[in-house]
Length: 482
Image 1: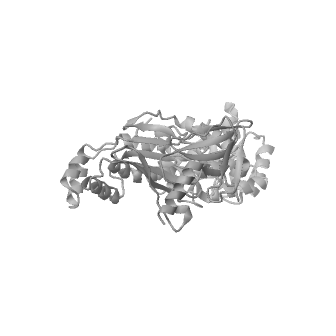
Image 2: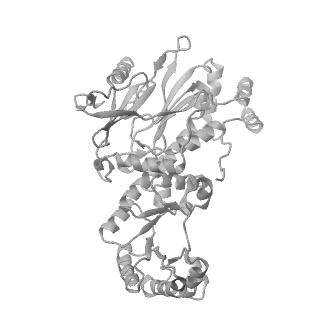
């Protein structure tokens, strides 16, 4: 696989550096702190999201270093202490990180990544972590919705030219594959990550030739085992499909090749595919696949399938690669605790707000998913203080953290810890899974969710609750800071 990672140490918000310099200058540089990555709302009003981007975060942290050019640039700003600049010459991440594996179903309000490190190190990596987590989780989540709408039909990502930059195209295609995509038109994503590259021709190919039939015949002669013909350059019904059938008969059939496909990129997809399917079947090509594209998303795909469209595969572009209907994933990075320099005790920290949703949950935490042992379905997530573990040998009572009188007892459940240890004292201790393993995990995770959580409109609010101990700590801190 091609390595496209590069040193992006300086890809940070400037205030990460001013704060790191300040921590060193005021004696906080050696204090260990805890930060959580979490998010507040699911994109598209969905009932869930998918965690993605961890591999790039791990690679970034492993490569973290400032070179001479970086130091010279920072010196030129005239605001950083020379002692701090010298400190940056040997700057490395030496802390711990826990994270939810890529492909995991996640929910608002729970820690997805937790960082424990000295204050300057923990603060500095905020920007890159959020950039990768927010972008790839957004696209992976959108992909799962589109794949679900397609109901078993293949989805290929076609959006590179509409992506918001090269990294958005490359890593967006990776994230779409995690979410269940079958392939991508982005060649470098295949080269770098092994996402199958797909694609055949554009309208310009057809226009280059004296007539449509010649264009199709020539393409079939060059690529007889990958003959997917774009039939809407002129007129799908009157010329495109008839010329495709003729080319298939003249080139493929004599070679004993039956695999072929046509693609439609415009027009009324439902109407056209019904007509085209009959034309292909009547001509003796029932095996010919019909691929469609043209500004598709989960809602359009769901509608045309309900209307009886005859489609075998979808190419989805701008509305997937940009998650057009919900393009911003709101992950944040908030301080949750510090360690007392003298005792090593974990001291919880909280951020208050007039908006209750923006009040953070303090402390170093763990997250457990509670699965029904009888059917494997996820019932709730329980956020606990780091030294707690739910006893799943007996019924577990959960309660709504906002309306505490709403309580439920879960019986016959097993508790599975979600976050894995990724870095220990700066050393990577987590073996990154392959992209295929991540994709499989995503599929398997989706299967553990109830349909009510997965539906597009008005999904069930999945329970994310706090342990009694954590709830007590949080509300004692809220009262104490009023």
